[in-house]
Length: 68
Length: 432
Image 1 (cartoon, rainbow over the protein chains, first blue to last red):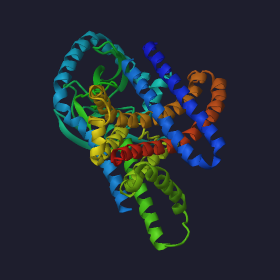
Image 2: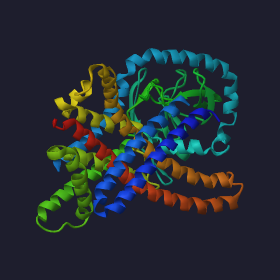
Image 3: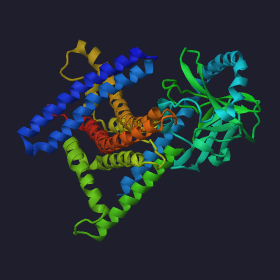
Image 4: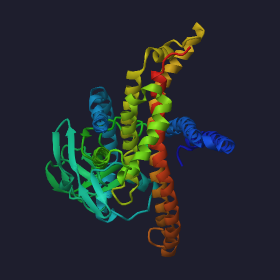
């Protein structure tokens, strides 16, 4: 079990991204419920935001993989 | 439509360029490689006694031993010099260059592709190990075509204290160390510059060509249909592609690029359909299982193209916001400017990593689910366990496949929408 600390770092990054993407999804659902006619715009922006949050987590994952 | 074709061709050509890049870095890395070689030389002397043991059971070694799901997963997501469709292995052309022997071009059938992509012949000191071409380091190994006894893998410690699996070729009772092809990852992912370069039409390159041809045919066919059926409702393939095409045009290009959308639409469409095509092609079970968009070199090439297009089209306003953000106090610029410059490079970096990580993770999860059968079956000892796991893992794999289908679209869309937003930010006119 080598690189355990890197694995912990990886999991912390994933927790952060999980909370972030969860919030984005929750708010998007709420927004769609409030304004069902704007579903197209909301979905596109939701995916864009989720991708940006994911990007930060991916950099952390790759860095922890490199230092493992 | 011809423009799209042209761009697809350009994308492919630039992919080739990234492979070529490894060649350019060669000079600077040479000294480093020489150091590494010395370190290896010492190591070889130490383990020389083990060599004979290594090859003593080379013939029986083959498939026995414990099942390693991680190694299986890595093998299946990596590139190969043979194209495997179900149980059949198709040879692909190998274009190899080494400094000592120069160029060698031949089909990978020269290796005599055996079970699981292992070649039983060495050709010009190259061998085929699990579908991947490797080169025997020892110059005493006979050139030309020779039959080998087998290839064994052994974990050895690298000079920097890490462990790495090295393949040894067994020939006349002796073990010969092999090395992997050169990769331009600067040693980050265990690669680096070795004694040979692989410019082959590998599995990934073949899939890429195939997808590019398919997309080219598709777009030419549809464009012709539009000419023939002017003013009529779309039919067949036309009605499948049109909603996707219009979606990218209306939801991605127009909102982000404003009135300049028409100029960048061919680029965005080519990017979207190329990534989508490769994502979906990689999803087809048994058809080679190519993992093109899950290959860092491919996503890096795509991200570099985006980086170039964004920065070439960046207007004065964009550059001013990077180097001298207006309305920011002068002392703060010492912090802002470096951050903005780093941000310029982080954007393509995340584009590259996002696509790579998502597709690779998807492929890996599916392989791990399938590996469950072998883990529960304990390499054939527990048939009941294997059957039970087979049912479970089939269901899990089908679930994962459907999620991956979604991911294939989402990641192609995300890559395109982010490119559009970067382009939009770079070409936006001043409004304050």
